Length: 230
Image (cartoon, rainbow, N blue to C red; front, top):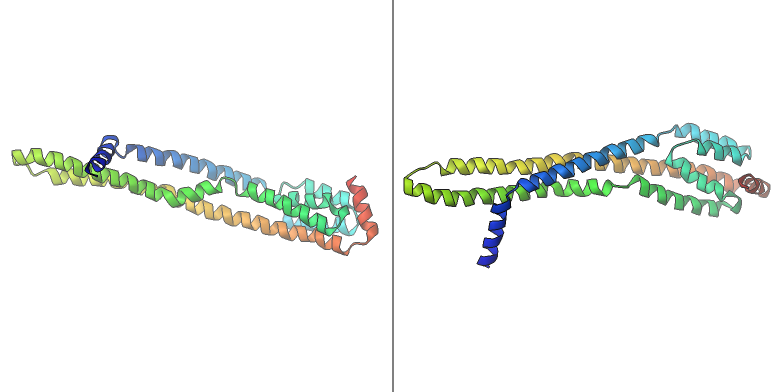
């Protein structure tokens, strides 16, 4: 046991907490890159969903599935991509269209939540990484105190406590950096998760416009939908 503890202490004092700081800085850079990429991705999906739903409703009431598909294809939104999958199966009935849209929604959910797990994991664990760096720094400080204290005791000096305080203060920086990395990651993770849920809720609402039409349409309209798809 003593051998193991001495080796762990030697490794901590040998390598120090510098590598922990560099790790946190690297993780912070990756985190900011993901935040910017996700922000741009969500911004690129923006569209007038109320206007799109009205265009879809009008086209379906006129029995013009081709116009409905064209309106959806012109939209960059994830909601439109899901409903297009339903229109592709509209001639096979409401159930087939619903299943197609559920599959498309699952694909869109994967795109919306991509890389968010990294932000959530970093937000939860960055403070602990910083605390680990602080612990290493404190171990180094007391190891230095033990060495320097023995030397100063022979000389009658009393400056060891000041040296330890300075080393501990420096070690606490790692905890502060860990918190500085974690807080933005948690905030943006929660924001993007909420935004993704909002998009999926809008997808459900737009899908119901198509399903409501398919449930109430007559066989002639269903045949027209099939011809329009061809």
